Amino acid sequence: FPSHDMEAAGQNGIPTCFIVGKTGVVEWIGHPMEMDQPLDQVVEDKWDRDAFLEQFRKSQERSLLMTRLGGLVRAGKTSEALAAVEEAKKANAGDQAYLAMLDRLSFQVQVQPAIQQVQRGKVDEGLAAIEKLQEQASEPMQVQLRSLKFRVLLSTERTEAAIALLESIAAREPVPSDELNEIAWSVYELARNQPVTPKAVISAATAAAEKAVGADPENAMVLDTLAHLVHLGGDLDRALTLQESAVKNSAKAPPANAAQMQQFLDQLQQEKSGQK
Image (cartoon, rainbow, N blue to C red; front, side, top):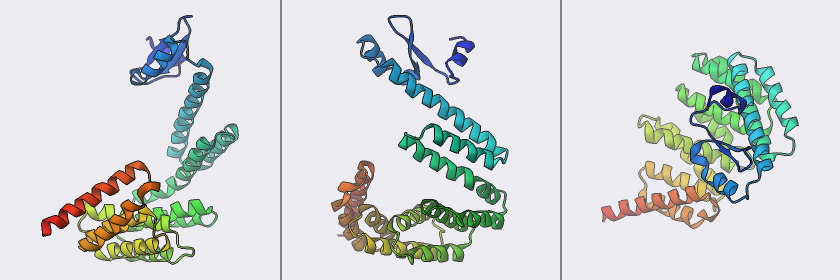
């Protein structure tokens, strides 16, 4: 299609496909890989053009919002970016899924200046910016800020401060098992990819995962994390026991995670058989 047709459709991706219906009206616009189902429905006169147009309009608005936010954040205009997010919230008050995504965007906009400071080597300034955000943040945002702060401390080799932060999170009441699980798993992933990860950090993560399991002993996700860390520490038998419990309780876990839990259990069982 000529470029002006693409612009009129609000498309800049290549390839882009148009489905023209029996009356000569464009019924659908998108990537060719996604056209089979709408094409069948158009041919069979089962296509809901109005529903697609509404979905397409929202998609275009959201794409424009992302582009606008990116420009504002790069220009350091955090207040304007947050105002744009609030405008989008008001315009989409009934769309809960989109509102949740906008909340995540709002968080990213707010923390981006702190992340940029760290990336420029101004770690103290970046940490101070995170702590400033914590002063008035909601609890869900507090959780994300603590996780971010932990990652910054760890990545900048401020090991003692990272451990102290993790221990302070583990000391909270009630025990934030999901938060501890997320941080403990991030340490496991780091240790798996970087064998030089300080043993004190791995020990602190293992202790945090132990506390998470103690608070939520039937949570397959936290059992799985602890099993991985225990195995990393060389205790195959306990790792096996923990992973068996994880698989046993995996019915409530996302299917992809449940499958990975079973794979890890199979791995541990094979390792155990090889020792006999």
